[in-house]
Structures are given as C-alpha cells and as structure tokens.
Amino acid sequence: MFTSTEKIAEKTIIKIHKDISDIKKAEDFNDELMEVYNIGEKEIVLDLSKINVINSSGVGKILFFYKLLKDKGGNLYMTRPNQYVKEVFDTFMLHVLIPEISLESLK
Image (tube, rainbow, N blue to C red; front, side, top):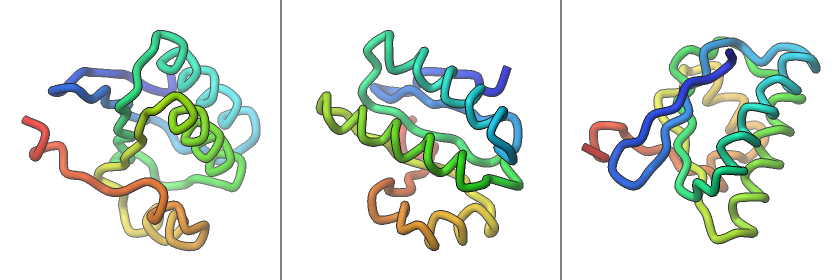
C-alpha cells in the first residue's frame, strides 16, 4: 500500500509511505487517492513526511486530486514536507493552492 488514512477532527489524513518517483508509482498513488475521494471525504491532509522524492507524475496526480476536491466543495492541505518536497511544491506553485497545516493544530 502506498498510503494509510486516519481521521483527526473533521479531516482525513492520508499518510504517503513511499516516494512517488515514476509513472507506475504515481498511478498506484492516484488509485489510493481515488478510493478516499469515492467514499466522499472532502477535507483531506496529505502527510508528506515519508516522501523524499516526488516527480512530475506525482505532482500531476496531486493537482488532479485537488481539482476534484475543489469541484465538490472540498479542501486539500499538506503537512510535514521535507525541504526537497517543499522546493518541488514551490516550483510548481502548489503551496499557493495547497496550504501547509500542522497536525497538532487539528487535535
């Protein structure tokens, strides 16, 4: 499994356990995101603490997921990205669309 989920307050935390470093991994990641989307969750936090590498395919899947959530009135957040992931998100301007929040603030 690429991810695990837990509920904190009204938000679903998706903890990503593997790097998203190629197209196959991005597709697997997308499948697991869609499982969460299809059960109707609208407030999602991506826990990026275990990711060391994310490529453009992974970024594309996150952007697609963001759009799906926004279209149904939901929100996407990120938490605990390392410096590399922050730089990738900054490069693609994802930090503007997907704000960073603290998990501690949800408890």
